[in-house]
Image 1 (tube, rainbow, N blue to C red):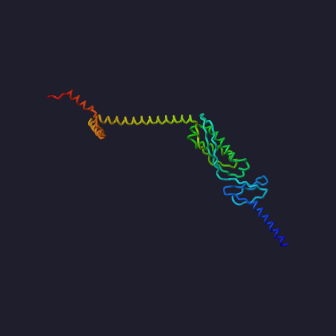
Image 2 (spheres, one colour):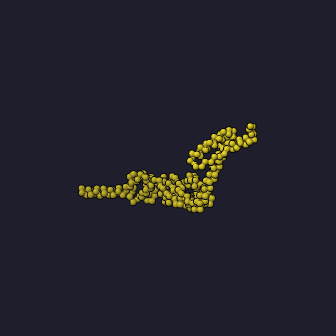
Image 3 (cartoon, helix red, strand yellow):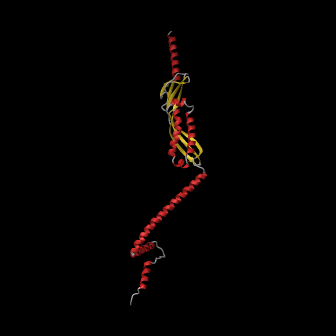
Length: 258
């Protein structure tokens, strides 16, 4: 009799161990567990750690709650100013409601990917080329709102959307390069003209000062001679001062009486 009881206890214990082994589940820190009992959503979402389910009856689905980096394939479109471009982007999103992510949409990753591609093509058609190249932050915000609106119903939150690259046709690249070169040349000419204007004003002021004091012109001439002689040239050309010619002319008009 005792042996039969021990055998029955061992059988019950073995059955219990098998039951616990088949019912035991471990949910990782970055996951949440959703239990379906006979096909219906059962109870609350299971938190990270050790949990038990009813074997055969329950099915535990684990949902990753980490931020997912989803690259958006390059989309080709025509901008509002009729320029053909190819634009690719990247979407950062995470699941905030594990039950909704499994129940309300068949595959939330695929759904977010398709919505991102559709929204990116829409953004291309509504934007000018200059906006795609220089005002990406505003476009990123608009793209994020377009994707986030339907994703909220799927238990998914869009964390950030970034436009990665804008590819232009070769003809457009050459046209933009010519435009940039012409703009740089225009600015260079304006800078040179402004420098000439400032130099002319300074030279005119210097000429007025020298006209009032002829000796200043002689001193400037001597400084020029010193500067030229410092270059160790074999030939030295000295300009003839105009004031000396005027002095000789006045001397001829009023000869000195003997």
